[in-house]
Figure (tube, rainbow, N blue to C red):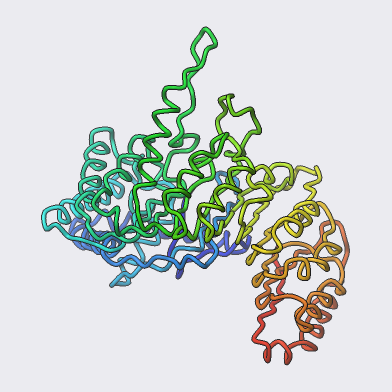
Length: 487
């Protein structure tokens, strides 16, 4: 898996872009080989990477908390590719530095000499920060810069120690992003506990995928040959993890995997709400397919538990300003993604990506998903994003009723199939007649598989429809976009 963060090099989820992207990787890899073979250019190469590291740590620009957090995985022949859109463009001073940054951030594996050089430069940057006692208000360290699994055991231990010292010396840190670092459990907890001197200034903490896959702060119980399970690691892990994320007095934004917060009783969630109170505004939860919670008895030990409805109700009492943003990755079935939320969850943003699933023909029951959203969250939902790759059911009926059923929704984004022009016309009329609060609509239409449609006639019909409403939408300051999805 590899990660692309720079907005200038953002790759849209379109198959024709993948062809260009894979081709560019081969070309840039060859360029890198030629560049590294020149001893004269190695000094320039090191300075370029040094510039990249320095710019990343010194000049981070965080995203706005009211924007949606999106991470979409696309299946390829060899791996899954993760495309986040929330990270802003890095500030790099030279064209060469940007070239190597793009190269490094896009490739899943690198030549050993290149990786060693980057690791060495990163450690030198940390030493410089420690030696000069440089202080920051915002720090962003992502997987493009730091790949812990690329260090050997001793170097990795030294790197974590240095990074811990660097975070410990910060006294006015307001935002920290350690997203997608895939650290060991003890490493991630240590880094967060080292922020003790910034506990009164920290406002935003981003920790999506900070731990390795299938490893989280709530350690799984071990099973002995006799069949008994020990809870010692779970209890110790939970207490240390809660101490790490609840020590920030002014925290307003917290971004975590759902599995990092989910307990059978919801005590971690309630404890955070009691600690942060009314200042807690945003909780951004990532829900990947390998962390689907299991409905179980509170006394039963499972890998990922589902937080109960009563926990969300109590959380809303302690943190009345809390808004929850959900991002679901590759979870198309209603009975699966429904396990992550309850009726009392104050959902502000609901982003669902079904992934690219070709072989399976089982129904997803996405009509039930839309009905549940309309029934449970008419007073809280503001942003709805549905990325449905050739969904199994026709959703025209539900889409016609969607806008009036969600009176607070302002942004609607949809990728999928719409069968009739009447559906689009109904949505336009509802906006013009002010039956809803929607002011931004982005629809990318897919061609229905197995259905023959005159594509040119269909596109002209849509264009004529939009022309009829264009003047009204301009006057109302409404963006209504309809485009064709390329696959």
